[in-house]
Length: 292
Image 1 (cartoon, helix red, strand yellow):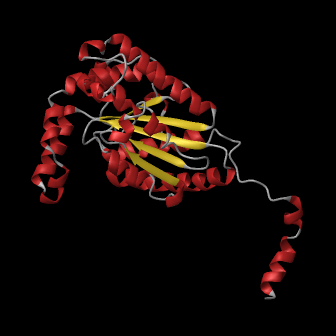
Image 2: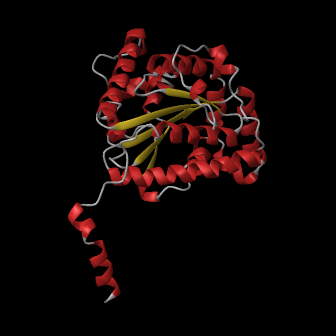
């Protein structure tokens, strides 16, 4: 059983600390990691059935990380044994014209999982204090009444936005959404290697964009913003976990293990009991079917 608690952010972290925590293998080979993952995700699949039958909670999983951190493949591997109707994945891109006519949280709110289901946000509402903070001119496209130029996007603006995000998460948590937030902590060197693989393999070329290199040039700024948001928004009801992402099999196993172990604490999530009258007639129902 993996001791996942050291990956949970319960006190302030620094950029230097994050830089030192990008690789993990749990002293297991790749084959052993994959074997453990298969076992863990089967148990998660069983839990999802129980969550659906119980029908009083939903689970929201937020994935953030630099380009090539492995979000897509993690989703594919961790949720492979789920009933496809029990998990919905949303990948948030550049806001549409309709989305810009609402507040920045609107598109995330309407994408929340319904009771009994898992929802995965592949990139999340945190893009609104991350990519927009690195590129503050993007905020101008939101047409906010008190923002007329980039000069209006100051520290007070970001503090209010963090307060809004914390309030959003607190509200949904109080109403039955179990929140997990995973920061896939990738090293700059490993990102370089993964970008080169995309360029060297013809069948992976489609994943590459020149924009990836422009964003990579802003690596240090992104790391500052990630560190700040982790410290400002890791709360007991919506904790952040730093996931060493240089080793994909280990990252997948760690995320699956955190989900399974944390969700096991919800002892009230169980299949509902049959109505006593129906339960008393089960043998009769069997006989009716057998005698058709």
